[in-house]
Length: 76
Image 1 (cartoon, rainbow, N blue to C red):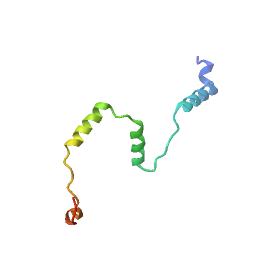
Image 2: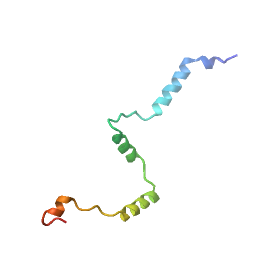
Image 3: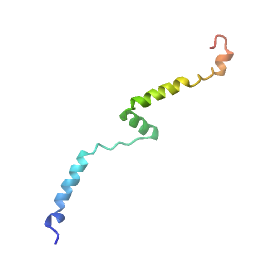
């Protein structure tokens, strides 16, 4: 036979209430970019990944000057 504790609705409600109180509050984001910014702020970048990214960016060529800087005198 089933034990009476399996049918106790109060025990189940207490368990659900305890689980909900341990969860962080839900957040809504207006755009996907907001979600990604929030996640990036919460997630630390491992040092070896940050170093590799820094090295990779250093090897990238610099973008050419914009057309209006080339046409105007003193443009670099």
